[in-house]
Length: 210
Image (cartoon, rainbow, N blue to C red; front, top):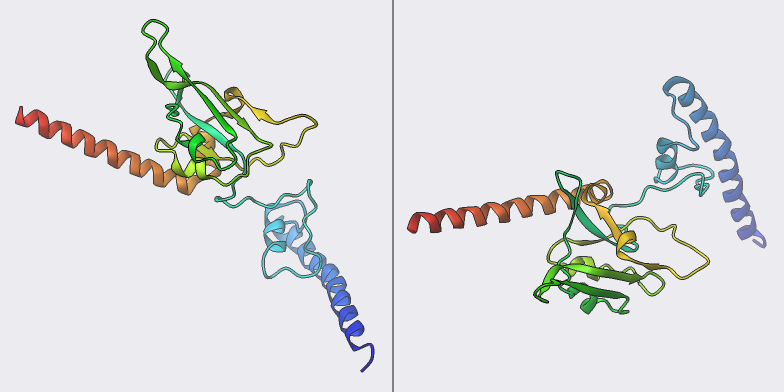
């Protein structure tokens, strides 16, 4: 029948239109009884993002934000451990592996040198990432042997100028990494503790032989 497709499309539109008001009414009772709201709340955003969503399911960004998945990746950042006196213990040893594997070559590292001996020190003097070139592939984080560079969740970095990140801007504590990637952090900490325990066991065995 001529116009059948048009009527079918209009029926879908009308269904969405009706379900929006119906879902708003259902959530109004939920708000009264449970204090949950369909809009501007974690519960409401989770519902509209699920397969059970009815009616309008648009997220009103930036007032509302979808929760970022743990494996979501944007720009890299450098991880540091916080010492007892508040000092920053940078994990990066300036080995340069991240810069070598970076496809667009947007990472530049300057290694620290001992002013007295001139020998290299395993710590970066400068660490720069050109965010305008970075393709957010995550290879730098994947290949880092010291878990010193990770991919961030912060994607709201638009500016009118060039986004060149220096080490001061890249440094973030391990607690921040644990907050955005709790499962990965827990797995890496378990592996680190197991490695340290193995080293201690090997050292104890050598001491007994001596």
